[in-house]
Length: 118
Image (cartoon, rainbow, N blue to C red):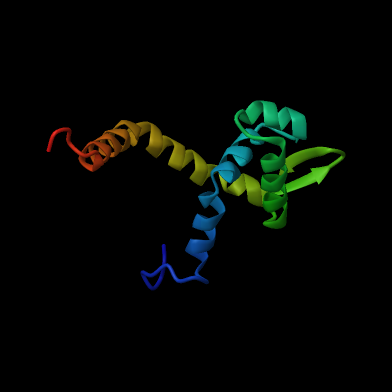
């Protein structure tokens, strides 16, 4: 809950939203939920991510205290574990409402496409 009702640049709610704004942050955290993984194992589990982008993502997550690297493996920190609940909530929302979002996108794309012969 944002006390003032605003999402100011330095507010903590915005900090949390920024952590999940990067597509790969939440995906990498979720992939690590069952335990530590090596870079190659994590990349195989995530799928669709390049080695370079995964490295950048892991560095960002380490910087924010969500992931730690020990003995060549990446693992969630207690802080990282605490973010799994919100990630699961967002995933559930997407599962429940994904069709609605895709339908809205299709309607918007249809309206944006010029009509033939007009």
